[in-house]
Image 1 (tube, one colour):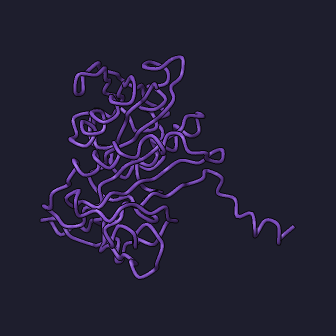
Image 2 (cartoon, rainbow, N blue to C red; image 1 turned 60 degrees about the horizontal axis):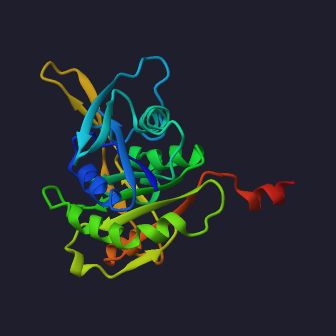
Length: 248
């Protein structure tokens, strides 16, 4: 199996090393990732600047650092690393959760999305850590993925569908298994804060307090809160078919 690995935390991130280590047990691996952190870039693409590519190595495999975003990295990877195509795109392992609506902001999820657009089976993997300074437990994500990558990469899926996986950042023996669940709700309250610089000029800092809804059962937020790995199939067809039929 030919595997393209990418992420949004950068080519030197700990998570991509863990992902490459697992992936090379399943086939030939090449990694193409941003040359620096590109978190929360969503499904953006570089259009008006050249992309610079630097050869590198990750855990002994061929790798490239790209002066762009995860979408750029997947497209460069399919041009430079795998010009004849590949069988699987793995994006991650992200150092933080991509639950609920976060999937729309995530560069990690965008990497899997772009792989899917290019007709390649794709999986995004993230570690769901919620406290500053808490360990990411990438080893837990790597172990779970090692045990489950075969079915993730072979199970029958509809066209334009990929997997978004969130692993609780806990020790592996503490995992409660995994659940295949829909997206839940993870939103931000008081997102934009007004501040002043030392000269009294206002500026605005975007972030906000995360509001999670683990009380909504059988969602990715609920599953991770209960110690389960959350596996969410996401489709690129955003059409609301029920409303479409009603309006027609």
